Length: 256
Image 1 (cartoon, helix red, strand yellow):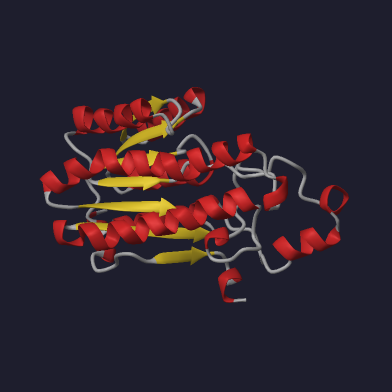
Image 2 (spheres, rainbow, N blue to C red):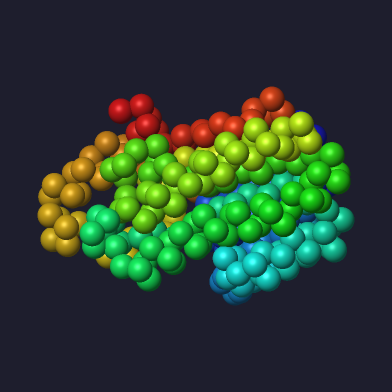
């Protein structure tokens, strides 16, 4: 527990009711951190809190639409009020798009995907920064995507949103390094989570060329716990000199 330096730290994990977020919240709790479990899914968030508490850990659930500034502020207020501050923010919550090319993206899809995948991390980051600055440092870890690294791993809206996550990560790393704040991102490849495309990703729905273009080089599907391990590493003392990087966790998809 002590090697990571996370014991007793206050950690916010968004999208923590399932998938990568759930695995990450549980992993932080195993390291002795106190976890704010943030998600739109109230039942799922409370289930994760119960799982953490059953193992002797400490957690609290905050639910709501994280792209709403008032909800983002409430999440941070919960961490500060319950645990005394925010040492780590994990911006993990996200949605997939319909794999649509730009000409087929509706206004509604564009707004929804950008709002959840990019605006929400920005709002939460803006809310935690004053607390991290006052405390003399902190760590922010964003869940980007293989789609952050190329133009052929998702539809237009999702790809743009995840490229934006990398821009946010790198800007934070440079602008706040002198205040002791590190910002990094993971870029998951295929992972067994609850996030799905809004349409079926198969040859019948899209044609073989689309399926091949997006997924032929994916390799094996990773477990959520593999993504969680990378997130916890980037937030830990073991990564004290790591700032502004994107770490692919994709079984070499990014290397193809």
